[in-house]
Length: 232
Ligand code: URA
Image 1 (cartoon, rainbow, N blue to C red):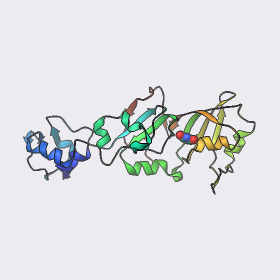
Image 2 (image 1 turned 45 degrees about the vertical axis):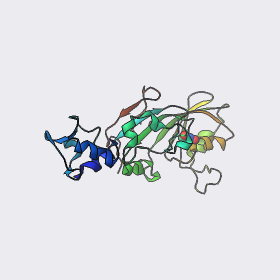
Image 3 (image 1 turned 90 degrees about the horizontal axis):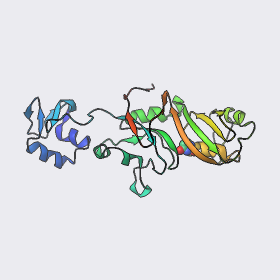
Image 4 (image 1 turned 135 degrees about the vertical axis):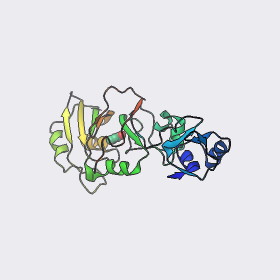
């Protein structure tokens, strides 16, 4: 049980002062009765605001098909972000909705967003080896023998001490491949190909753990059960 003003502020309804105004105006009820004390304790799901249940009182987990041109950063100075695709109220939640790892501005595809930070840590920890599957198009024919280099566990990226964990490359065209990695190093896929003299011209994530992007349209998101790919 938490303070009512704290609950509503954390769900993005407004500042503590805003929601206190709503409470004083009798707009917040519990069991059909107005609650007048902003400091009264409640379970979020028991509250009604203008007669409506609170907007997603529990934790959020979303799967977005990230469009190109949006960043995963929360800093407005970095440009348009993926968070701008979400309902405005969700952008004011605290803890904030954040991406599970990051995709580059020009990378498209499966991006998880959540306000559950322990879940972010579990899903991004290299210890858990969560597979991430990328469709990759490069600027030349895929070099011979690259499968063995990626899968060998000895590929060292410039300025990095530990080699990349084994990755699987499956050819799907002369310049296109599906690559599965279990880490999330900075610009990892682009740098793995750059080491082999190739530039990535198109990068699209289609899988994350047991999740597949499927036919989700670009820029759209769906809600997932918070424990749908939980990892312990
Ligand atoms: N690897 C990259 O190089 N970029 C991404 O966005 C994701 C993986």
